[in-house]
Image 1 (tube, rainbow, N blue to C red):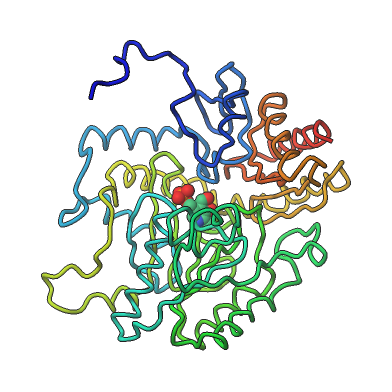
Image 2 (cartoon, protein in one colour; image 1 turned 90 degrees about the vertical axis):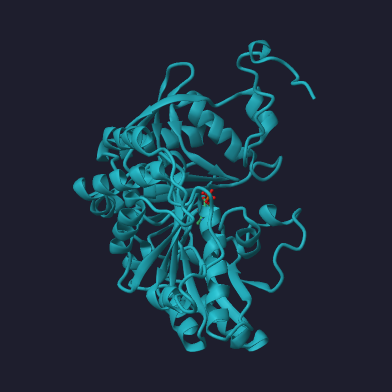
Length: 446
Ligand SMILES: Cc1ncc(COP(=O)(O)O)c(C=O)c1O
């Protein structure tokens, strides 16, 4: 078979071949939102504008963009050890990064399994949960429980425990034996709340109902995001996570926190587990671990789970799972440099200190046209806009275009919800600038 064209014959700037992920491709290609560079709090667009990043890329770049120590570490690593096979061979940075990540995690979660994304992290955690119960002679525990409106990436496991209908409905049966807790969001009870809503802890008790239906001995694990980000920023209600922990403990069910977004400072701590004083059995992470500079994800595992696999003959693989790019040297180098910046610049503490500043600023948009709810948590806020008559998501799309093309701000639009999740280096005056621009965008799409 001959190629369709020689490289020299390819049309420059042709947008057709790239099928973009989670993007309205045809609309995008009619009015592309293109970036060509980034530094600290800003992106540079293809037409040379400086756009303030109110999204940390996509919840990734917590230390801001193109940070010199990270780019230098990646360059050094690429020139020294470009790739190392992660099965049966090791390299020092992988062990060092695992140790550093485990040190940030709660007491007793001391083992880290690396992969390349949040989706792989979710699927890895679910498989470890099944393998753990099997190793202990409780192989009947196969049921996995997620939550309505949850997002755990796009693998079949993560999609199955996820609870966002558009992500699921055309993909068949997904995994068998999956249930979903109810969403913790109820606008009537919670509208316009700073931080964790007062209402909703009782929704954790739905897990007891599932135990009542299926029997505890069939349930392997529950996976939840401490703050459901991708669906539009839904903070856990006060007391919800401790209650879930208590019910899991009572019935021998593993509790997995998906901290792909909440890890590495978004809620003012290394992990949200610390904010809530709740220790899960596993934590999934990705995004902020490398500041988004190189893909990486992973699962932090409680010692007892890890140790349950470390039995049998020593020459035999304990967990038949892993990826060609697990603990990739470039990702490990980026991760180590990123963790140094988080520590040296005190970025988690900074996020905690700025939480009320962002919350107060965003609350000034209460009463702006079509704003029907505002939620804030950590260095994150979301505004729900009333949908346009023409259909859900239209106003959000208009806001996305207006923000990028006319107001020089990058934010995340999820349906008609606008999410603000700036890098943790954001200044107080930049918070003011972001909120001012968002106000203008909201008025522009009224
Ligand atoms: C909580 C959570 N889990 C998993 C994922 C999937 O991560 P990735 O896109 O890296 O596969 C995301 C992505 O936003 C997420 O927010």
